[in-house]
Image (cartoon, rainbow, N blue to C red; front, top):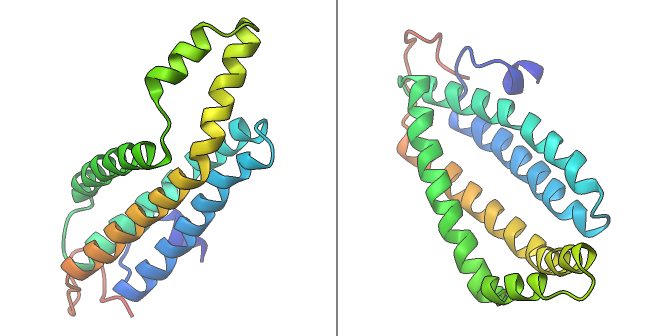
Length: 165
């Protein structure tokens, strides 16, 4: 299990990749919605979220290796993921109805000074936590399932090791 998430060497097949990715998406989703319970958790959870980057890199590299591709192709996948996440975030903001200009205006004119500004930002952030967590999970699933469909496993041993079981 540790080798699956923490080592970029070797290969993993589509089923193992999909299972590992769904696990990481679920963990990320939970980390993204926990600030609803306590806003103070957000900083700590942000650090845990950063730590999750390494397991993502490892499973993607191994899946690319299974298809006979270089692990560097992960950069292309990352670019697609960033673009889709930005689009999804904008769509979520429009659907949820958080008006960024109005938020800035309220923050600047807050009677409570810095605390009023912080309160306005916190209120808007709480409104977006769940929708953004859901859209992030959907984007992750679309990319995982899409890439898994496009990347055909090499049934023979290749330069990255024996065929994944």
